[in-house]
Length: 385
Image 1 (cartoon, rainbow, N blue to C red):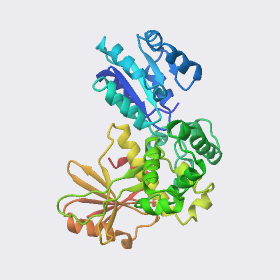
Image 2 (cartoon, rainbow, N blue to C red):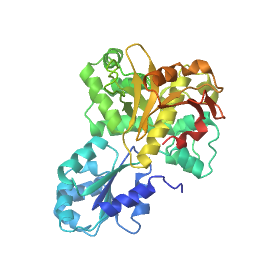
Image 3 (spheres, rainbow, N blue to C red):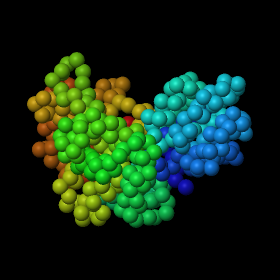
Image 4 (cartoon, helix red, strand yellow):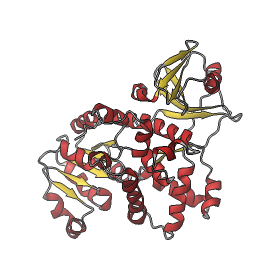
């Protein structure tokens, strides 16, 4: 079993709160992590209709069976359970009584904030990161393979065909989860929307344009983007700004949490297909930014990353806010250092003197340009904290 980098953060949270909420996409390993943390405690899966029915028939009696603690999986299926948990948790100040998991961030956060505020901690478990796979000495030296495979645990543990597994995941998500989370009448249009989002990976979101392509209104696109974000299919990277430069683009950029899933949506199933694809640059950028986001989540940090673009088109792919100041990172799929790739970073350093600049690329070597800008190999991405 691959050791999850978030394990230490999860153990700490259990010592601080009466309950711990673990959220993340389906099949990211939430149940495995929960059972590791709570060895010997009862496990209850509310996706099971029989268990759902037993709870709904008599919630008070059901919850009393687990007054000594339990793992409650996919709790968003029974939102009324949070009121009963609040009463139970208020009777004891003991830490780490329950673990609650959910694969819909909005539904879980909404219920926690209403009923369990101050009683429950909150962590996000994403698919395997490159750092986690590398630590286990798995074969991750090939960046194209990493991108195509993604990080869903079952693919790695069972050595499955990524394309087959991920296409099934997409269909299951659209046919089952979307129906359960939101009443979307035309799943065909929603499927088209998801595919269009894949083509927007690494781009600034234009909701009006997406609405035209899908054939729905802009409000629907906004709602569907929220659905994909709260289901951990994609995330929106917000623009960085400060008072020194107000002439900035204000719309977020779109990225997928898992590049294996992104490739499946783009019908890319081979290394040759990926290497020669017109979106290879955007896909590599997506992989890098998603990895940095995973590493931050594994440390319990859920913010602090942005992109920069002004109204003249000057752009930096990623800004990481640090105590010492912003770290600017340009991401290029080039395999060799090239000064022509540094224009964005040079512009950034002109207006942010003294700040650090990094070019993250597909090459193998680390180099320095004029003692100011560092070339960093993708293999060292976990060092960018």
